[in-house]
Image (cartoon, rainbow, N blue to C red):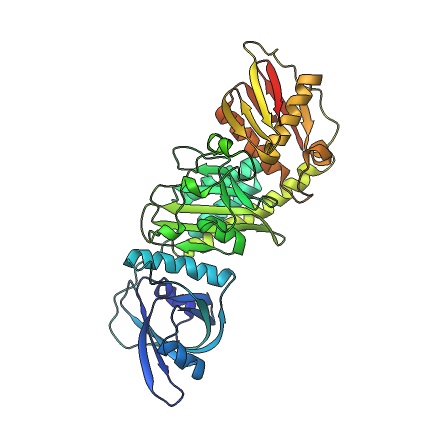
Length: 447
């Protein structure tokens, strides 16, 4: 019988059941110990968790060869890996991915204070041996994931705007993959944060809520540009309202009023985040979660990585189109005159946060964009604007040419739709948008 590949036994590498590792000292004395984690790296390599400087560690440094006994969590079949130690990594994507998974294992077993990852020991897999026995039949493979990726690709191919692309990915996850809770966050490079631009399955959308780079599953996945998946409840990777300090550099008294509630589950038991990348650049993160343990496996991770790749390419293509010189602008459509009581708009210059009456709307780059167009409207009656003119306006201090302006406009448009029915922003053609104001406005700047 042909020996199995590492990919064939990946359920053994999910951390559900501890593995037994056998090593030998330099003078030939054997030692067997349980190890918390055997992590899939690729078809030729695994990584084992280095947590303690114990006899196993001592033996490996003296003699790099070892065997690991794995138990399949579904069939109860045993497999023996013959491995050779190569190196230890204490930072980077592999280390952070293992750290996240180990946190889940620790929380599930009540060992949070004991399971601390010191390094990821990388081993070459030299042989995979099937241990003789009578395993149970393998459960049927979960189907539909490749179909979900195809449907997502087809939907994205039909999109004409970034907003449509975001909706397409979330719809594919919900309709075709059965994922109820998901969100897309975009990267704000100067602020080193990610902000929510779309979500599904939550009581509130949370559009505009922020997560810092390196914070929780989402922040780690974005910072390390690698998928991060946990399958058990873990306090180490949960989010709370305290996690987001929205106005660190501005007046302390304003923080509470400008913090947008994060939409995540109160008690997630499975979480998976993957970075959204294009041409080597970080654009954001795609995140899913569930109230159930063991909800997302390695195939879900593969599916999400594929969807995130399609989304990243679509976002870059759409940005290139909307930032290109636009065709002659069409004549603006007639708009009804603004009537009723005036809306009080206030802008705090320290961080470009904008309030409409007493309600917080938005801040940062999107806040600066909104304040510019509202000033143009108040002074000149303008209602038509283009991405290109915003990109070239030095007063907005846009981060750089690679910043996704379309994402800022999506965020602004959705915040207005949720919190200000009297002001709307709508697309008016390629690289253009239209402002619709239904009530008079009074603008006040506060230093």
